[in-house]
Length: 197
Image (cartoon, rainbow, N blue to C red; front, side, top):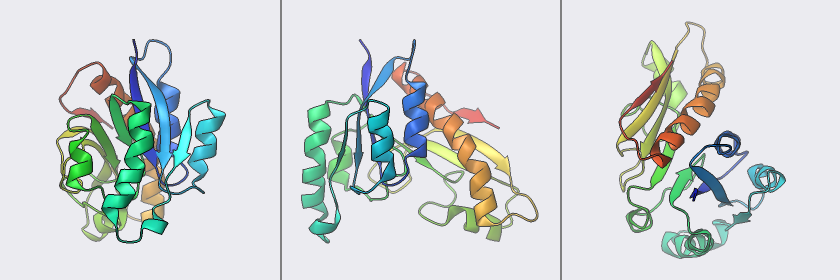
């Protein structure tokens, strides 16, 4: 019996598509839901086109009431009964209480070589620091932002003429390779750090 994976997105869902496309054949998991905080997220229509149930809970009517938003978000998530929750460009910070419901079963991909550059503007920060390498990290989600155990990293060189946009464009295909590879390992019960170049 396949494990069930819920994928949370906020935008185009390119990592969601990479994850969903990977969960075929002998893969031990299948996507059971794509869920967004933005009803206009284009990734929702991509999910539906792939035959994956999709839903949205707009965060904006909740204002600063994160608990109420998360209560609403939790309803379709629990209905889907996921074994694994994969954050794929989900741009809301989740409370410790929400994260605790899926402890050890929630993954995220972040566009830096953690523990460097938690939060936003990661590519600009890597360039400004003069780093020779950048990349992305898949990690287990914990209560602290971008701080859980690292499960995989992919590295790319930072070129002398790089801008944040050109660096981001080179990192993104690595995200699309790394996240599916780590998800498969996690679904098979494997841990440790996977490294791609």
